Image 1 (tube, rainbow, N blue to C red):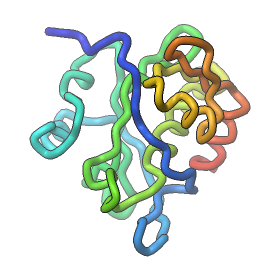
Image 2 (image 1 turned 120 degrees about the vertical axis):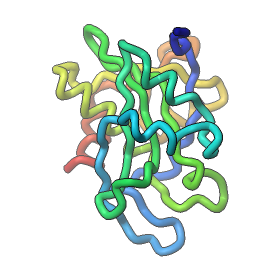
Image 3 (image 1 turned 135 degrees about the horizontal axis):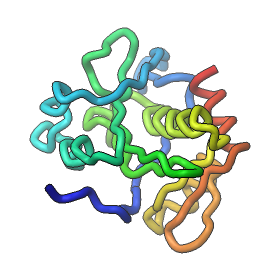
Image 4 (image 1 turned 30 degrees about the vertical axis):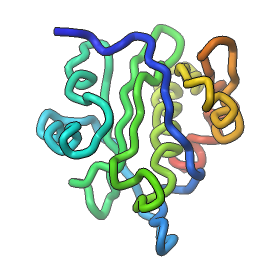
Length: 175
């Protein structure tokens, strides 16, 4: 079985940092929950349903864990996904994606990406890594991650979210 790429640069945009996720039209907030992706979820997050990445491949990777973001009110609709890998001293964010209905000018919710990144920071804290998160960024988005997430560009495509920024994100989404 082929392994997912070990060196994939991420290209996600953080629209806004919210307390949960917000309906773009009404401004209503919806409480979220992040749960492990299940085998039963894979059909709903397939490329043929508009998802950009092969989440089945991520799901099958032994060293990675895939999580889904849903709302408490509607737990059967996946709002976004994140794949992470727990390393000896940090958590590596391998892949992250908003649901197709949360992309573009007609998206339903703001805050999905911020919520997922905050969750990865929370996992890092829970593993005793103080929130240290590492990911590779596409060159054109390095400044965006520096501004929105307070991530630090440490060279090449490598970005790090250090504990102060991680604490802020965790407190924002998981008070």
